[in-house]
Image (tube, rainbow, N blue to C red; front, side, top):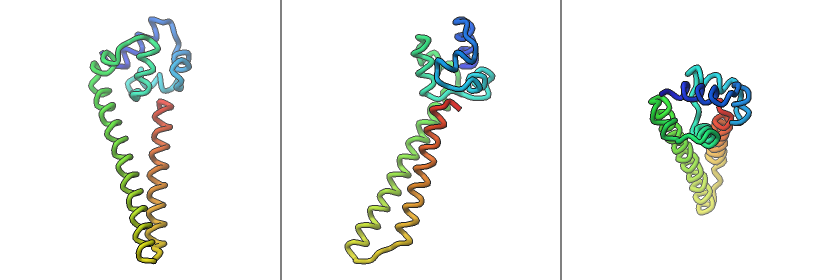
Length: 136
């Protein structure tokens, strides 16, 4: 059974409106509506909240819906990618600092561009994390 059907069934069995379910899961009502109409898929954090709130196994929620299973896998890959990019940019920053110190040169252009890339990636990562927590 798809996650949209499972959510709708849970909500109706517990005689909840989309609004009250959204409040219990700490997401917006529109997120619940998107999930139930198959226009969106809850992230792993929201799936865990649903599982705990209604005492349903994550297996039942994830394995039955192929789209959801793919999304969970893609989300974890994207998270790993962000960590790798941040680590890479940070290592370049350290390299520039050590090189500049040892050779008594200050490479302002490289330092500023690397800092810019690092902060830009961190901004994207944090925005994505906040977006995922809101269930949007």
